[in-house]
Amino acid sequence: MNELFSARAKELLSQVDNARLISARRNRLQKEMQQAGVAACLFFLPANIRYATGVSVMDVHCLAASERYCIVAAHGEPILFEWDAAVKRSKEVVSDVRNALWWQYQGNHGKELIRQFVNETLSTLKELGVNRTETVAVDRMDQSALFELQKAGLNLVSASPLTDAAREIKTQDEVTLFRVNGEIGRDMLAEFELAIAPGVREIDLLGVLTNALIRRDGITLFTRLVSSGQNSNPWGTEATNKKVEVGELVALDTDATGYEGYVIDVSRTFLCGDVVPTPEQRRCYSLAKEQLLAMRQAVRPGRSYAEFASMIPPLPEAFRPQAYECVVHGAGLMNEGPVIYQPWNENNPHDKFLEENMVLCLEAYVGRDGGPCGVKLEDQILVTRDGGEVLIDYPFDERLSN
Image (cartoon, rainbow, N blue to C red; front, side, top):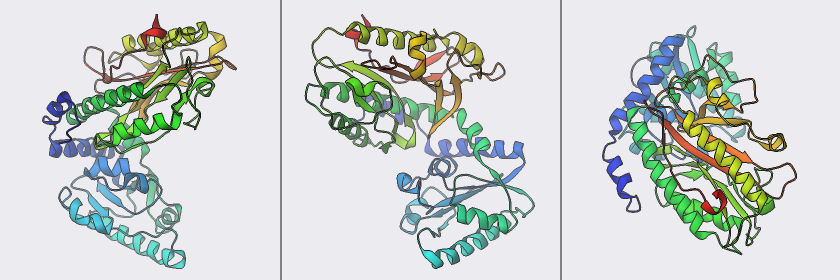
């Protein structure tokens, strides 16, 4: 076990049953498949492969490269097609592991490999009792292979409605792993805040964040959202070589793939230096914190998305043009559903509801169009039977709060 894990993280990890984690996730997926009349899923997206099989290999690389994949029938165990060098390791988790084909950037030989892939896929589906007239769901895959599967007569649909629905509600062990990642997220923020000083570059602070994650068995940051001063308005400027100055705000979004692949997504904004914040900094921070605390209180299972949104204090008109479109998104092995929009947005449904064991990211960004600064605050919340559990309860900067 990683020696940098907090005592609480170590205690939580002792409660995780990996076999139960894998089977419970797959059961949720297969239940969705059965209800939708989908006979099999063909997955290339690393998060879906991990969800269905429990195995992760080169996840960042495989977001762009089609070098490993799996087939999951509506009943039974999955078949994993693995990168040659990882087959032995993956067999420790998955009972049926076979060598994967890969064909990208291989010219005419790649076309032959695609034909082999199609024949192999058809043979595997037949082996699993799936015929060509039944529905097969696919996620993000190389289009050349997708077109050839269609030419072969497979009835293909998108896997997203199935995987989205399955992953939205977390299993017992997923909840525990989110709490473990909450500990890692808190440590990331602590090291980041400690490193803020006049003259430090935004990119150096990004390095601190990355270092804190990787050394605790996290996987990667999937954005580089660290900004200071004017770079924090509008939100979305990724880390640069700009040096932080005394009196500037420093904002970050962790946007991390953490331990066992689960998202660590929390934001804080800090004041650099022992100075008094400006009225504009205080106002932005006050508005963002007000929204965030209202959302914490609004989290309840059974509450409709529309009712939740109605409980959030709307931002003044001057701050709306640059506000986040959504105030809530889900988190799992990736950013996921549900999605809830700003209270002035009419797209929040009355017939969709928060459910126990959803993991929500509550988003608040406040910065005036053309203003000198912006404030980003975000919490990660587990929906419990009684309300919401803050998974990364990192303190606010009280100099800005008061």
